[in-house]
Image 1: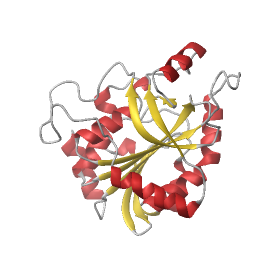
Image 2: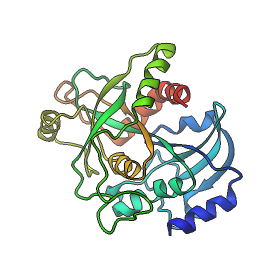
Image 3: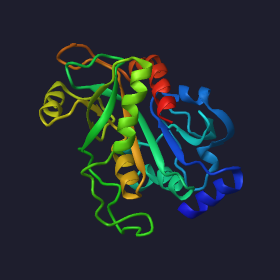
Image 4: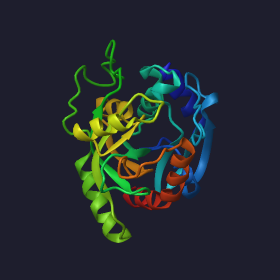
Length: 264
């Protein structure tokens, strides 16, 4: 299935990108900056699932950004949608077969760190998985990666240094922290938020972790950012909705776009 999907895209696309970007909820604004050469809906690609979440368009965008050939996943897939982990990471594996070596992953995440405010951008320095499954479970595909990939340093250090130089030029504050991946789709209780903070989390979300694991397994260089969509509870005692998450992500998206462009 991977080979079939990859061949379909090779037949449709005039170039093979080296860099991929996964755009999370409300973060599709980067596509406006891309000189688009090809736009392919997920529904047309063999084996691809269909995104069912508001704020996820569901298409691969191939083009030029800052003089680099890139592909953007405008919309991703989540375990909570009912997909298997194999389906969640299927697009990422297809992109690897196309020759993508570097991956920038973005998401909208709930704030756990009381020092964070809504609209902040966090560089993900490490991850904690609380998901009930692992994307590498089952028979290992040796041509993709090893049976037991090392996750002690899941993010590319050279890219992390590059972020520092870009920030010097852009001049806005960037938070750093640990992203906790949970199953969803419900938002967290107050007790769960306290627990997630105790175990070391700075932000929480329902994506990204499977993608990071799969990318590391396949030897890709990875960089990841979260847009913080709310201040933590109990710092701000209110209910949050997905619509508010998308709205905040849209507002903060401009800075994230500038950051991603600078890194690329």
